[in-house]
Amino acid sequence: MPPPESLDSAKAFVSAYAAAGYKEGYSAYGTYSYDAANAIIEALKVSLPSASSASAARSATVEALNKVKFAGASGQVAFNEFGDDASRILTVYKVEGGAWKAAEDRRLPVGTRNR
Image (cartoon, rainbow, N blue to C red):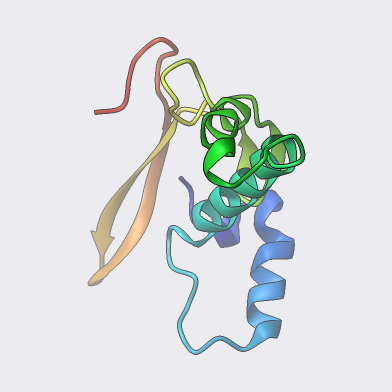
């Protein structure tokens, strides 16, 4: 994933994170964590209303999570048939001047599985 500060989709996330005054930075995976939490929340909105208990909603939650699709901080959030991120973008980083820098983005072929 490209650095969050370089994504138009992450501008609101980056701004809200800075305004909240957290001591630690959001790191390279902050937008992924934010989007993962929102994906689970969206799935629970579907699975919990008809469930008799939280444990009874587990299967329906997994099924609903597979169908989640929304514009998130990291970009479009959706999952393929393997449960992997459907955007399939890999960012290659390299060290420059002692710091990690994004070198290039690669789109992974559809139909391959993350390992």
